[in-house]
Image (tube, rainbow, N blue to C red):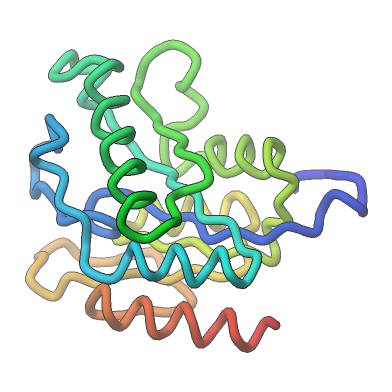
Length: 191
């Protein structure tokens, strides 16, 4: 459990996995350039909606392609910079922070399902994990959230994917649209 002084444990966040949640999944490969990053419909408007309600929006993503030397940190930074600038220009909101496990030194404790990325984000932004939400599409996303004591987990379930889902999420949805609707409903109930 993350221990923060009581006055600093007031912020809430939605933690998002990246590939397959905020952008179209590259399948078994990786997003290797800004041109290959295709934002999922509705994410930009959702960010604005979250920020208007005082919630943070933080990406927690595994990008082993850097450690495998398929792309370098500079290219990963370019992908995220283009995403952030595009969101800000079009919607007036972007992600508050991005934490990426790259399998390089310094990020080893961030490998999913370890809680490292969420723990660091909670410390950096004074987030109460029990009041926060994680959205992911893989067992490791849900397990990471559970390991970090996140209060609610939502899994986007790809019906065409043949892998069984072994880790139970609090909520399961079949699409980005359903995730957005369910997330908004949960947040409205919390306010």
